[in-house]
Image (tube, rainbow, N blue to C red; front, side, top):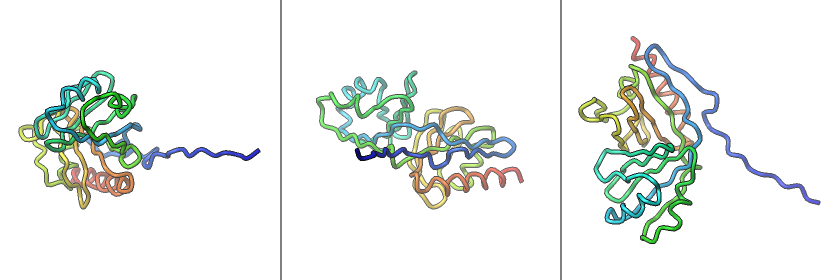
Length: 184
């Protein structure tokens, strides 16, 4: 009888945690992620299937109590993240035209928290992350260093940085260096 093998995805930043006075960097838990594209007029039906209201305004996000999060990335585009469920499966029964592409294999996230979190991110990001321009719940596709990321502000001093897995070491090292520089 032939032996079978099963591939297991390893997390690119597993075990890496760092920080400096006032900021902590932690790899986010594994999550299912989908890139959702649809006409905004169909957002209500998609929202029902997902169990949360898809945000319809620029730079916003929404979440539910089960840990599902949706970030507005464009007039017809959302990033849906779920650490416990499968958003693609929930959209399988929706009768409106949409595209839900599983990008779980492509992305990972780094949680940046603490009173120095904003300064750490601003060291490599041109986005205005002030309380006025980027309040709690804000989400934006932007750049960090030389790469594209999605930044979601999840609390007063908490940010989630979504990036491609292949760039995760670069992002983690850049943020680590920025955290140390913010102390000076």
